[in-house]
Amino acid sequence: MTTPHWHDAFASWYADAVAHEADVPDAMQLATLDADGRPSLRTVLMKDHGPSGLTFYTNLGSRKAVALGATPRATALFHWKSLQRQAIVEGDVTPVADSEADAYWSTRPRGSQLGGWASRQSQLQPSREDLLTRLEQVEARFHGVDVPRPTFWSGFRIAPHRVELWQGKPDRLHERRVWRRLGDAWVTETLDP
Ligand SMILES: Cc1cc2nc3c(=O)[nH]c(=O)nc-3n(C[C@H](O)[C@H](O)[C@H](O)COP(=O)(O)O)c2cc1C
Image (cartoon, rainbow, N blue to C red; front, side):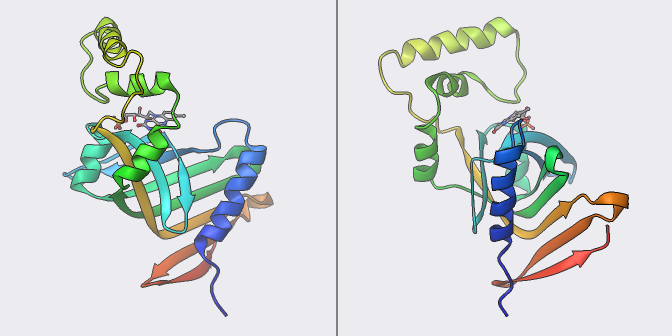
């Protein structure tokens, strides 16, 4: 018997979350490790998912992107509270292709594109006015033309080697299904809560 692929189960749970979770079902907590092995955590939005992994986008100068340069591994965690579900995806991280990043960038609202240009994400901000001045500068620079994707903004894909889907149940008898990659194949296991 072929073991079901993790992505079939994940996609089904994500569809449930989109249908039932009122607030940002695509928000995931993303953990990274810096060059000293120190963990850090923040929320990002999952922008795509498929058998090859989960995709998110960010500023390539950000703290998370610098950490991923040093340690190209990450864990992403979704908590879909209304469904009493948690999904945890652990894997290796690679940059998405420029063409993929361009395609996603072109779907972003113009305001988000301009904000993406103006923000030096995770760098010290001298003042709020400084950021707003940079925004005015990019608005002037791209006045009347499409806003191209900055070279300092792109995406990453987490290709999982372990996926856990956690379903809350009464009396703490929760269900935990785990998929682990073994070479090209996947094994599934059940863990005690
Ligand atoms: C709901 C939500 C969604 C977010 N989505 C993104 C995102 O998709 N990409 C991103 O770079 N930051 C996103 N952020 C901001 C990050 O949490 C974080 O503040 C920023 O990326 C800087 O993180 P870093 O300094 O650890 O790199 C989001 C924050 C929230 C609360």
